[in-house]
Image (cartoon, rainbow, N blue to C red; front, side, top):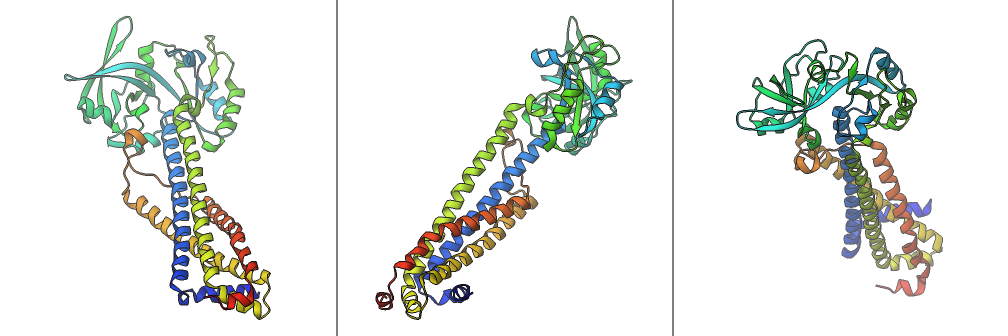
Length: 413
């Protein structure tokens, strides 16, 4: 195609053009590159935040919890029957990977110098320890048991610092009912998730101890936690769990309910959803900046090559040919900008992932460094949309070519 051939020759020899034209090309290329880099990094950051924080949320709180309905409407904990039959029924729900029992009870940890109210989370031998093990900063997990007390306690790093505890220390826990009951634990592990809702109050021990403190019957527990194969299927799997257990009663007349992690912690997931809005604003702004710089650069290039356009028209080139020529020319600038922008974005992502140079306050952001997740599909969509939108925006300045008259333009300097 003649217009493509001419545009390619012009682009290759752009360094031979006037200083203003060269500067316009560099500015346009830089504008596209910076815009694309910002868009890619922004998407990677948002995906990283959503993935990192979501994984922490369901790592501790599970994807779905099966509870006593009264526990969701009142501040107290009420038991439900979680027997083998119920666990098998929940495990058979498509999309459910694992089912585990738990018991929770409020209490207080006390040392000679300080005390702190906590929520004891008792778990059994079937508890999936992968998440907790991955976030241990000291010590090890005890052998969680449902037939005897292990005496071990896993506390958060924040609690350990406030109570001046270290692995191996003994500490008393107090539980307030009609009478004050005391238990002595040994700190076996210290974890850190940077999720304040959990690190501020949650401690882990065996399910036998908490179950015994409640004095419930052998098959009664606070509830069951369900881990899914894929978090993206949460809504569909939740609907199946609702059909399986909701609105049914156990042997003691308690009604089952099955809230999801998004329903239990709506504020956290609303904040994550808000990040999507922020990234859309960034995408729109950066595409506008990229388009504006390319359009401005093309206008300058067309004006500086008015003489060339006049000569081409005098030799028989029509307006359509010249418009396509400069459209190709500008497309080459956009493609070069896309290449540089992708390289810059990947460099920034690689630096952050390997060094974690950009740090965050975990109290405000729940992570201590900016998390990044590269999704090649999203990057391809960003590149494609940037190219298409930029080319569409270039159609207007290309129309200026139609108004250039050969006789006057040849004398134009």
